[in-house]
Amino acid sequence: MDAKSKKLRILLNCSMFASVTAILAQIEIPLPLIPISGQTLAVGIAATILGSRQGALAMVCYAAIGGIGLPVFAGFAGGPQVLAGPSGGYIFGFIAAAYVTGLILEKTKFSITMALVANIAGMVVTLLFGTVQLKIVLDLSWSAALAAGVYPFLVVGFIKAYLASLIGIKVRERLIDARLIVDRKKVAS
Image 1 (cartoon, rainbow, N blue to C red):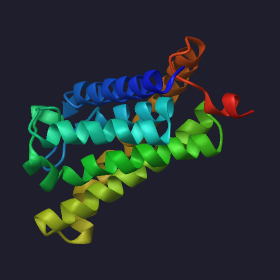
Image 2: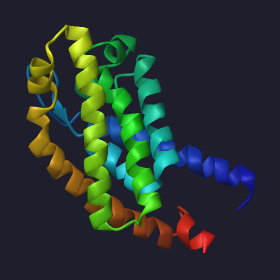
Image 3: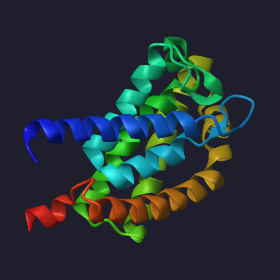
Image 4: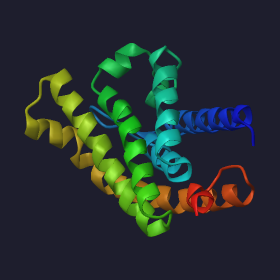
């Protein structure tokens, strides 16, 4: 595959997963401050399939298209005010979470068990970013920020981490078989 084709494939992969994230963002359970949505499931799936750099790039694309005003965030929201608001830290956290999740898998192996570990680590990263911004923007105490920004998401987060691991590894295997993504570990050996 030549360099142009490789760059185009990366761009298409990232665009596709930014779109998947936008779609899953609309599946939500409203809560008082931050809704539970399908965004984090999409982040985990993207990172599990694409790895650290492309997974993070897909989330950069997602944050950018939402940041310029397209209604891709939960509740069909968009614009810089969302990124600067109470839920913006979670969106920025998606970028770091995708990178961390993918990096753990690249450094270990792409298995369901390791994907679960990696996706749980990614969940922690997302919750950390989100809670810090929630605390700052709403001027909450740490205990109030944790009560609003972490605790309601833990059980659902573990479920989404498991689903992202299972779906991500199975889809990744199929995409490698179809030669739509490259397994770097097999190429390196």
